[in-house]
Image (cartoon, rainbow, N blue to C red; front, side, top):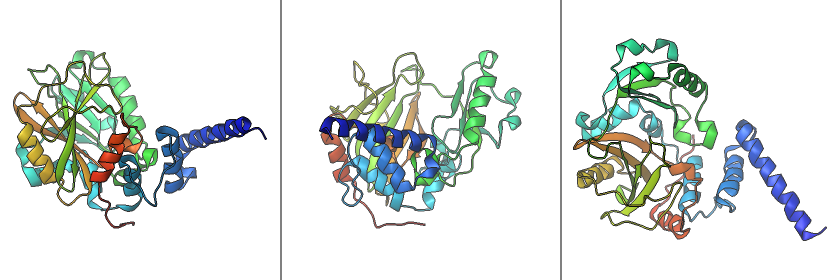
Length: 304
């Protein structure tokens, strides 16, 4: 057969596999699923026997680093108590209420501005800046959909597998100086910050911007998932304190991304993430995928 024809059929077969894995993820074992999705989104074969890149090692951790404490750490309600026990209550965004389903949500009992989010997934968030124009039906439909799913099956991120699906209401935050709420995300390896990025323009009409910096806040030539800002964001006032707390929270863990906000001179804990972009987003330039991978030292396998 003509080599071009073979490549055509192979490409179509792989695209069909990927479509099936996304639509019917439970048909595939964890390892099969990760190999199919990695190949399609990263563009290379997943090497689990001798992983070298950061994205490869994140897939390995999904399969083999199953510390039961991780479940508590990614639960957006339980994580607050976990983090408060290490760095203190003063860095925790106040929780206004916890709900098991949307029928329990009493909007009248909430302030005019608030945030609702699912505790067990990523992305199920509704921000209310004015209750008079809050799109309740749209938000509640999103939460009903989110509550019906086990987020683990989406990307096989093991820490989410046993998180109890709930909705929490939180205090709304906004920084007067930046007129938004920027996310400061610290990549920690064995308790040491190596890199961070700042996420901005997350609630506006423009595309979100990611700008990467080293541990001394020198801007890095990295793009990953979103473009850089035209003008890199300024160093946050509480940078050194956030860095210190990120290292404290990540002690004894091969890799952990620790997220903070800075609002009106005060630091707030955001979330803990074990799999940045779930390990399915390429780095530009590619050399950074290998560099991050060199920082990540894999532990012994812990499967349950």
